[in-house]
Length: 288
Picture 1: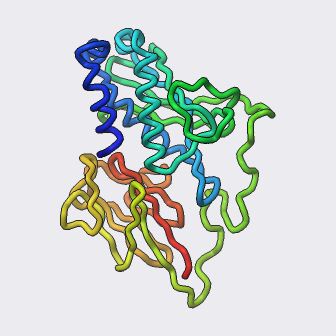
Picture 2: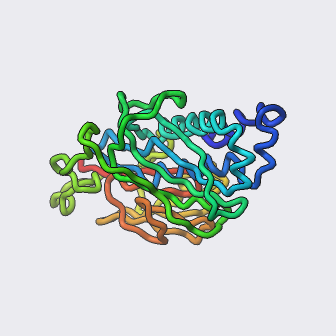
Picture 3: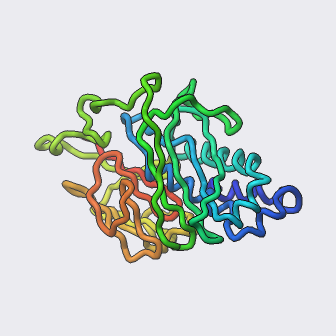
């Protein structure tokens, strides 16, 4: 079961009680939850093969009418959203620099039904994934990022917010580890002559070997790798193995995002992240 579906089920028990008024708002909590997932994907920073850091402090900007409806329940809704982020990060093997917090703010420039999500990375006492009730970290530890979360294809708005980086916060690495480029991917020009390259993808912790020149991903049972996600088309995209490997959109409804960029075709490197619907696909390759 997907993280968003679990989030919806947790809220269902509250609809007739505390959250009855929340669901009268034009902005639905599940919309915000989906935007937080995309915020993590779009601002993921690869430190090394085993660690990808994502923002842990989020601000959801709402129109004045939506904020008035949601603000009385901001604490409980923030905890539920933070729990969803924690579950999604566990699924995607993301880590945090500190506790996860989700705040609601009013934005006078937004119309009813519109919202924005902004994020930052705050350092805390632990780099593990803390529970949603933990207190905020003392200082930001990484670059700010923002995703213009205007649901339903509404107009984009600037996102992201940041603060001066203090000396007490653990800094981002000034240089990548040996053999890694700034993006956290292999810095070599290509495989050694005669070397055999293994290629695979990882989806929700499951590994799928790329054993043929092409691999079709989609919701159809005819796809090489079936993705059970309502935001994924029947034949959504195709990975073509080669030097270099590439991913090609197959005319899908929602398109593809590769390493944070909306595109129809992109070159893949070890660690590249392909987002289709609300699902993240990690491309991997290695010699031997």
